[in-house]
Figure 1 (cartoon, one colour):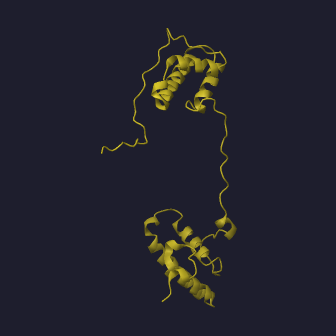
Figure 2: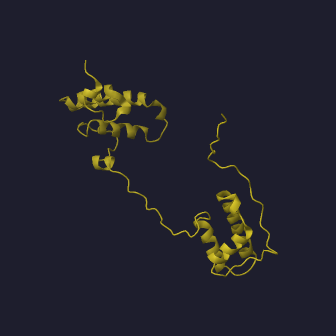
Length: 195
C-alpha cells in the first residue's frame, strides 16, 4: 500500500490525484494528435470537477491554463486558447504601497485632519461653516466611540484650533454640536460569565 505522503506532491490539489495521473499519461503519449484528444477529455473531466464555476466568462481559458500548469508546461499540444507563460502564471503580484501618513490624533483619523485643512482654504461662508459643522460632529462621534468618558465639546474646540493653527475657532456659546449616535461596536465585547 502506498500512502499519498509517499507520492509526488500534487501541483493543483483541487483536481485530485486522478487528474494529475491522467495529465502525466497524456504528457508521455508519443503522438501529438492522441495527446490533443486526451487533453480534451481531461478538460471535460476538469470542467465537471469545477462545474459550479462554468458560468464565468474565462472558465475554459482557466481550465486550459490549469492543464498546462499541472503538466509543468510539458504537454505539447495545440492549445485552443492562449496559455500564459510559466513565469507569468507563477509570479506574485507586487505589494501595494501603503500610504504612511503622520496622524496627530489617532482617534480622529487622517480624514478629519484633511477636512479641517480644506476648511481653512475655503472662503468664509455657508460651505465652510457646513464643513466645520460636519467635521466637528464627526470628531465628537469619534471621541464617543474611542472613549466615552473623554468626550468633551471644549476638547474638540481646542483640537480644531490646534489642527488649523488658530485659523478656525469655535464659539461654544453659539456653536451647536449634533447628537451622538449610540451604535453598538461592530466587534462584540466579551461578557463575563456568572459563576
